[in-house]
Length: 114
Image (cartoon, rainbow, N blue to C red; front, side, top):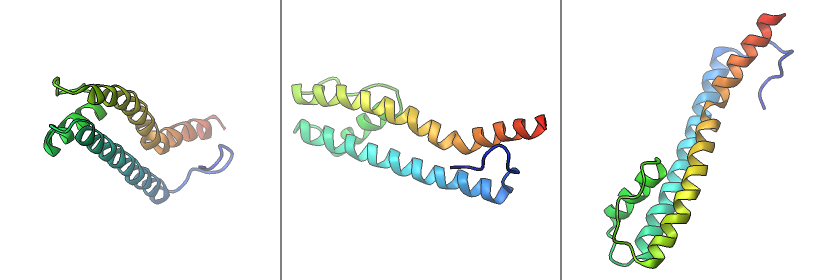
């Protein structure tokens, strides 16, 4: 948790460390989510190459939509659930990465009120 509104603003060094920490954790979450998608696409349909699985998973994770349209039934099921999972992960991750910036902005507003 960050400092409460009645405490002074954290130094810039602490703020930059928080941003870097959240970026690293967010990148790790995206990497794990991408790995889940790659493995899922590759193993649900036998004919999908690793590169195609990576491409489809990365496009779904970024919100662009699926690329492959010749999936088997298991692949269609996986693609549907992975798309729902990806949307939640992407939106949550953006909020997590931006949390220190938003907190600092609102903390400055509260300090100016005093």
